[in-house]
Image (tube, rainbow, N blue to C red; front, side, top):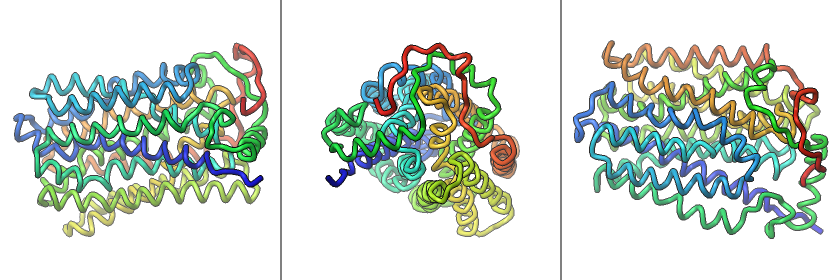
Length: 432
């Protein structure tokens, strides 16, 4: 019997969910100039509004990592997307800075389970040798959500105003939920989209990872292990760059490069097209190295380190006067870093003890999203103080360079083992 391709339909669902997730986040950055004018919000206040989402989003990462391991991906994702979509719609009705900050904080609670859940789904549905491409595909939704849809959102804002953009785009999550509930099951063997041959293939691939143990420990236990730190810092570096660009790139092009909002919307597409391609390329490269016999973690960290070198291209952006040249350099930085971004979550699945992927993913996302607390508001302060983006562009370049060295010299080529400390509920065969 020829095996079906149901697992890739699941990856497609994760890609669409991630795209919707980041579209909902990105509306604020695109609507920024209109909102600041309409609501009399200063640059610093807008930076504060940009970071409010991440106050709750980061803090929720620890409990959601445990929740997804407890409740399973199907229920967790269903609740999450309803919550964050509703908050996105409500943003369109915000009439004051205080109300908008409150809504963005609640939105962060809803979006918090997304990436830990994605990681668990990939771990349950795909063998290690396919996870790089799978993670690259779903993570490329960040680039699509942030950048490729920017002209659409800019057009909606120009046609009907910023309020309508939040309401229209925020409603997309409810449509996705219908397909998720119809197609997805927590275990491949319980899903009608995977035939017997595919289930056997998935379970055989998962068996190569060894026996699965349900582990009940605090995610903070991982702080005792060296291999956790490059993962935590690496996502922080990636997110600092991404959240800075997501919140401020359209405003940077409008205020410093003197583009119209519509023109800025189209120019913003290029960096995220490159990021989309980079995400997929990173997965292809790391999976190819594994098929050539490389240790999976060695393959991932080599690709991660190379990708994290590209943001240094932001430095010459400061000195070029031509706007097209500046966009090309920003595209090189974001697109090259996308090579690393595509396998950040695949690396968690390879490094975490089996049965604790959601917990390590939650801890990684907690630390990584502290960048969301910092990048938007710090950028606003720096721009208000120096009246340019010079220092704001230098910071992510340096942070990502440090991440490249961290992956290269700190991350060991072995899975974290916590056998002596874990409280084990029960052992189950892989794939069950």
